[in-house]
Each structure stands twice: as structure tokens, then as C-alpha cells.
Length: 273
Image: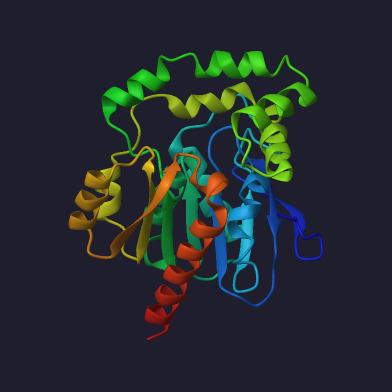
């Protein structure tokens, strides 16, 4: 999926004492801020938003400690990440922004949406890190950070070869973006795994705008959890994409992007009414 350099521009904004790097399509269209997951970058979501760039002003920021953004020694809890998103919205003067995010970015988007309240237009959560306290502790105590430290000692070419073997259906361009994102993820970013996560049931209950929860049948968020969250907030709907795991935006980008587009068109029409 081409990055389409004729469409995307790059920029940096200063917020909360750090620099946040972002890609943006621009134009007089509804702003859509899409947040990546841990060990990712905005570039990794280019295939997901490929079909949305004509209808939305898509902004793909790099979270602190990732990509081209600053990497402070501390300050990687979800409250910090969400604060950066709210700061980005303010710095770029985004009116009624739509927030979306995958994994860590999904939880961040939910926290930021709570902060923005009715100032946001809609929310899209792609298999966010809505996990139990026990699971949080298990992830925190795992060797995921150690694995990342080890990968940083490898070469880019070696990591690309490994990624191709592991996910042969992904495009070469996406694999390169994912590998580059890994190589530009600071170890401090793993602080986000520190328990406890925000109470996601409480978060969803207090989101005052239309929300979409997009999950795979082999992802983190189960169908039962999706149904529970819908019961907590009538403004939330969920969509299940089959034959997809937590890497939903990487493995089913066109399908996920199409579902997002349909939902957002309806959300905008409702908001306009």
C-alpha cells in the first residue's frame, strides 16, 4: 500500500514539554486522529487509513518514545499519552476531532475521549488493551521488554527477514514500517505496561459520543466483552472481523478501514443533524 507522498505531509508540535511527530493529509475535512500501539508508529497505520484520506483530514502521531517523537525518561502512563493527544488536538486547533486507536492507542484514545468529552466527534477502538487486572500483571511481568531490548541488538535486515517469515501476507512496505517502528521505540515506553490500566468499563460508560469497537475473532477483546461494553453505553456499537487477531489493522487493513469509514460517515451525519 503506497504511502502516497503527494497526500501526506510531516510535522512536529510541542506539547507537555516534548515534541510529537505526526503525518497528516490536511484539507478542509473532518479531522481523524489515529493512534498506534506499543512498538508501533503512525506510519504503521498507513494501510488502515488508505481509503479514508479522501474523506478525512487524517493525523497519524507517533506516541512519546516512538518514531520521530521525543523519548523522555519517564511519563508513559496512559494519562501521559492521552495528555499528549489532547495537547496535539489543541496545538493543531482541531475542531470536533474523531479519535481512533489500536491496542495501546485504543486505550489512549478512550482516555483522551473522556478528557475531551463532547468536544470530540466520535471514537473508534481497534482491539484496545481492555484486559483484566490479572492479565495486566502477567503482561507486566513477562519478558516483552527484554525481547525488545534483544531485538534492538539485531540488524534492520535481519528483523525484516524475521517479520516476513512470521507474517508472509503483510506487504513489504508495512513490514518495513513495523521494523523501523520497533527500532525507534525507546525502552522507557514499556512503562505503559505498569498496572493498573485505566478502568475501561468506567471509561466506556462515560464516553458521550458515538463509538465503534472493532475486534477480531482471535484478538484481545472478546465478543462477550464487546457485548458487555455495548450494554454499558448505548452510543457504542461493535463489529467483529473474522479470521483476525490483535494485528487487525495490519492483517485486514482494507476491511477494517472500510468498517471505520461507514461508521464515521454515519456518526458525522448524526452529529450534523
